[in-house]
Length: 239
Image 1 (cartoon, rainbow, N blue to C red):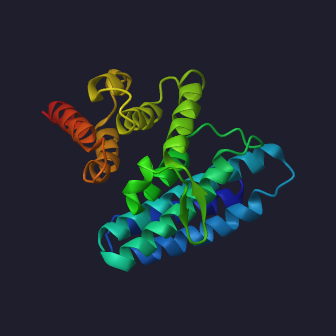
Image 2 (image 1 turned 60 degrees about the vertical axis):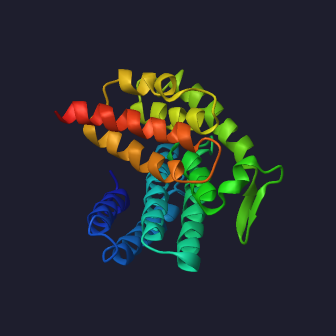
C-alpha cells in the first residue's frame, strides 16, 4: 500500500471516531475527510490502473462518510440549517457516485448510488410522486422514482454477480422494493435475512429505514412494517 492510501485510511478512521462523538465531533470529522479526499483525488490520477482503482474506491468511501455525517448533522437541526446540511449530503453522495459508477475503476457498490436518492427524498418527499425531476440549487436534477428504479436494476446486476452474498446490497435492494411498493417487507428482506447479517448490519439498515418511514409518502406504512420486521429480527439476534 502506498503512503497516500495509508494516510487516507488513517484519516477515515479518525473521521469515524470523531463522528461517533456526535455533533461536537462532526466538524473535525469532516475536516479529516476533506484532507483524505484531497489526497485521493491526487492519487486517482496515477498512471497505474490498479492504484487509480484503489484510490477511487477510497474516494467513494470518503464521500459516502461525508454524506453520512452531513445527514446525521441535519438530523440534529431544523429549518434552513437542516436543509443546508442535507444539500451538502447530496453533493457528497453525488461525488462519490461519480467514482462508484465510473467503469474505469470497476467498483461494485451501491452506497452512494442509493444514498444520493435518499438524501434528496428527505429534502423533498413529494418528489417521489412528481412528474418532473427534482431541481435543487447547485444540485443535479433527478426524477426520483425513475432513479430509484434504475438503482434497483444496478443492484440486481451486482447481486447476480460479484455481490451475490453481500447483505449490504440486499438491504439496499429491499429498501427500494418496499419504498416503491413493489414487494412486501417480508419478501423484500428475505434474502437479507437469509444471509444471517450481523448486529451492526441491522442497525445500519434500520438507520436508513426509520427516517423514510417517518415521511409523508405513500409507502410510509410499508416502510414502518419493514422497520418492525428488522427490529424484531434484531431482538432475536441479541437474545
